[in-house]
Amino acid sequence: MKLISRVLISLMIMATAPVQAATIEMNVNGLVCAFCAQGIEKQLRKFPATADVVVSLEQKLVAVALKDGQDIPDAELLRALTNAGYTVRAIQRTETPIADLRERAKQIKP
Amino acid sequence: MLRWSIGLAGALALVGPLSAVAKPIAFADGTTVMVEDGAGTMTEEQIFYAPRYDVSVGGGHIELDSDETTKVRRINYARLNYLVHRWNLDDAQANVFAWGGLGSATGNTFSGTLLAENAGAQADYETRRVYASLKTDWQGSQAFSHRIDTLQLGLAPYKHDYDSLATWFLVQARQYTGGIHRGVESALLLRLFKGGAWVEAGITNGGKLQAMAMFNF
Image (cartoon, rainbow over all chains, first blue to last red; front, side, top):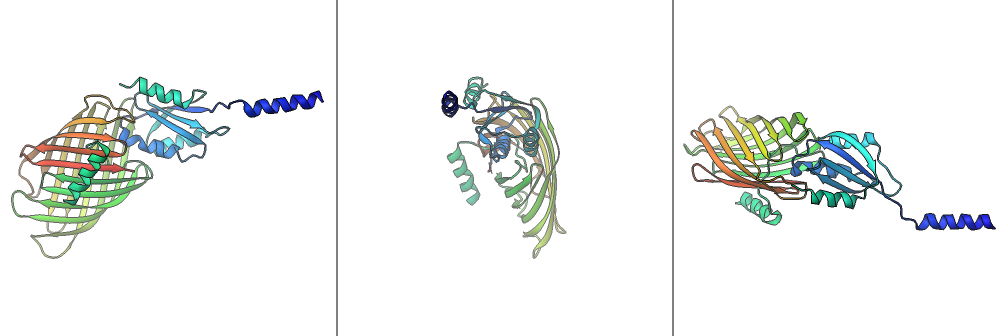
């Protein structure tokens, strides 16, 4: 009985706990023109796992918010950015909410 | 008139005159529409689709109206644009493009419709504050040969970002061959772009208006 209670409680906690969506942050070379960088957002939004995209020319940053429990392999990200005409220098996965990255991009605008 | 209407409507709707470097290829799976009025001697409309980031295909119409004589050329063309090389640097991007195509030409100094050929190239360098491009575009047939060489140098008063309005001030020098315009035509231009819309307008040393609008989607 105790075991069943523990399992049920655990399941309830898992069901109610907020899931932290992962963010992929990419450092990109050649990001100098917003008119031309639209292709990056267009390519990245094609991925079913993409929840949101933030581009910051000032930080040379392209960030993708992932849908819960989903991911995009690095190789596919590299291919997408290359197909958009840009060069990826680094890819890292963080827990930074995409809203924070968007806010940071606004605050450090030139 | 139609060209002006489209350009003006785009400018008013999107609050942006023409952008930093006009490229014949925007991005993969992107469509570019461009209209330009080159101070009365050249008007051009283009539409290109890019299946890849380094190739676009499409067509256009160019009309050359000599301000030396009564000579007029009207050329419709299909064209392939190719990104020969791109340098993605830390704070800059540089490109070399080339293009070529075929079309048909009519005019008032020859009869009928002639096969027309087109070829050109562009080299550009751009940071978020400075911009330079050199473009050459040739149109030819058995009855004529015209080349338009354009040099543009630009300065941005501030760095724009992805979602903000970009503003550029440009000086342009343009030379026409084949009796379209005598000497070098210079112009001062204001270029604005935001999102997928770019508008540009200015005045030449001859006091004529030059304008362009471009849209990426």
